[in-house]
Image (cartoon, rainbow, N blue to C red; front, side):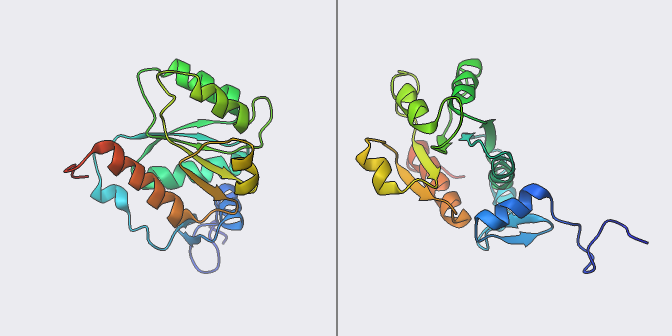
Length: 178
């Protein structure tokens, strides 16, 4: 009988996980693309409640990246474009994100416009922005885009997790045990 598992006995990969594997160099673990350095950090960091705002129009990639960040112990707020992200910030004004992970090429309000709008909001102007885009970094920087980090697609998941962890440490201050 077919129990929904592959011949090796593992469940079939979800569409989001397959898409993430195609867009990154991740490896699969129980159907989820996981970087080789991730060792269930969420177990070691229980109780950490940091929100990351993930702004990405590709549903599969957004879902897969959100799951990866959740595995690493972060709360994730998702937005499908810049207009949606601004609504999320407005509606959850009591939750200031640790960082914004931002795609640039999106419909409605793109990442460029969202970044300008974010810079104009006093409560959010200094939230670190990490660009995740197929747009060349040099082109983005010459156009005046400001970001603390820039990851060109396909992204390296380990690098993404290292960047988010570094931002958490920087914002938490010295001596924070997480």
